[in-house]
Image (cartoon, rainbow, N blue to C red; front, side, top):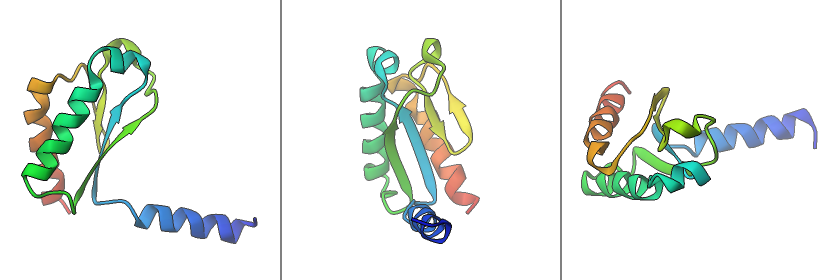
Length: 101
């Protein structure tokens, strides 16, 4: 593979992403603090608010702040110790990100 092929792969990958991306840590330490339920809550909110075309929620590996988990990143903002009950703040962040597009 040469540089041109790698660049094309990177471009296609970038183009496939939705405008707003939410990353939820699902590594061991965050899973132990209920990150899977947080991720599920965010996915349900995206679906309920008909934002599935614009917002992508996905699990990622360790974000290196294990003692602050669960960690959720909405674009460039990293949220620490996120609980299911606090995902309403993240819903607002999703909407704000969409307004800025």
